[in-house]
Structure formats: C-alpha cells, structure tokens
Length: 101
Image (cartoon, rainbow, N blue to C red):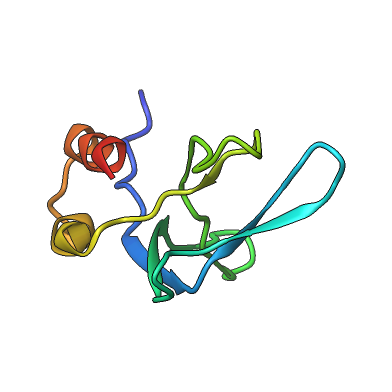
C-alpha cells in the first residue's frame, strides 16, 4: 500500500526591504529594489508534525546579479500575488509562475 500524497504546503508572501547575498570572500552584499520599497519573496509555510513548530522557507532562484553565486529569494511582482496565494494553484502552474517572476 502506498502512502497518499500530502498536499503542498500553503504559499505565503514574505515582505522585506531587501536581502543579503554573500560573495566568495564572505562579504555581504545588500540587494534591494530601486526605488526603495517593500519586496515580496515567494515562500511556503507549514507546521512540523514532530514538534508542532512553524517553518517558513523562502523559495530560491538564480542570483539577481553577477556579483554573487548563491541562490537568492524569488521576488514576486504584485500582479502575481493573488495567483501565488491561491490554494488551487497546481504544481506546474506554481513553477511557471516562479520561473516568470
């Protein structure tokens, strides 16, 4: 008997005015939108079955600049907020939405 597939964790928006990325020499670089405003990072949230603690991982994508190599949080444009937060959003559609962000 196979275990039934669990539903994907609920999507969320994580609001921030920027994020740090690290260069090879361990130097932080502050990335932020210009003009300065709040950005919405794509995230998911869940409650752990083991210890009932919440978790909120950010979804990562390719770096936003050439000065860093690490993945960075995916910034969603305002027109994608409703679609990202829609509980009916399927896996393939979610991937398409994130790739186009």
